[in-house]
Amino acid sequence: MSEQFVSRKFQGRRASAETQHRLPPGQHAVTDFPVLSAGLTPQVTQNDWRLTIEGLVQEPITWRWEEFLQLPRQEFVVDIHCVTSWSKFDTRWRGVSIDTLLEQVTLDPRARYVTAYSYGGYTTNLPVAELINGQAFVACEYDGKPLPREHGGLARLVVPHLYFWKSAKWLRGLRFMESDQRGFWESLGYHNHGDPWKDERYSSDY
Ligand SMILES: Nc1nc2c(c(=O)[nH]1)N[C@H]1C(S)=C(S)[C@@H](COP(=O)(O)O)O[C@H]1N2
Ligand SMILES: [Mo]
Image: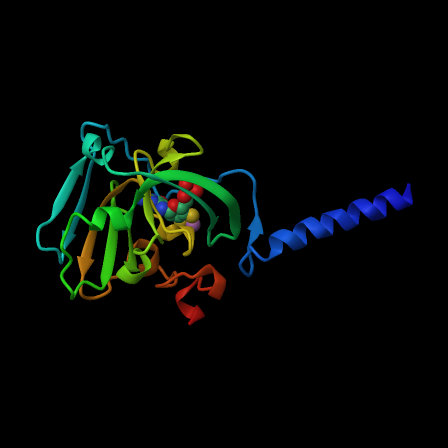
């Protein structure tokens, strides 16, 4: 009896040691998928949906839903980290890489920062360098199904290497700019960059 207890405890420790290297500081793993929204869930129909790239581009571009669905999609299996301290391993998405979207515009070389803006008014800011080269995508499927509304459907940004508030739900567009402009949470005291591995949670964490 006591031997079994000891060995089970030992296995538990080993399992957590295996996942420990995937947990950024101060995070714990969850198996459910919490919903975090700073307001009501916008109801955008497929007919009304648009995604725009604008700002420092030669010509802005807007996709309608059926045009967006024509773009090459990829599967992404990534760990996500919310600043409220939950992390979720191996989340499986399908979507369009930001690299694929950017193939269709000519970026002005001065474009160094992006504001991602959403239906409902949410915004978040990112350096261009952290959106490209396979680091970010616009997801329209989660776990083999259309992305649920509460998780950002019809489509959301996913930037897994930064805290999950940077992954704007109900994405409406990306605005490319020369200078950095703080988004919704960044203006309210959250860190401007938000790297979970550097524990960049609040503006005071510099
Ligand atoms: N448009 C929009 N995007 C958003 C948010 C939001 O309130 N509105 N919340 C952010 C935060 S704080 C987190 S942790 C994740 C939560 O995504 P989830 O609800 O799919 O877990 O979305 C981010 N993107
Ligand atoms: Mo969050």
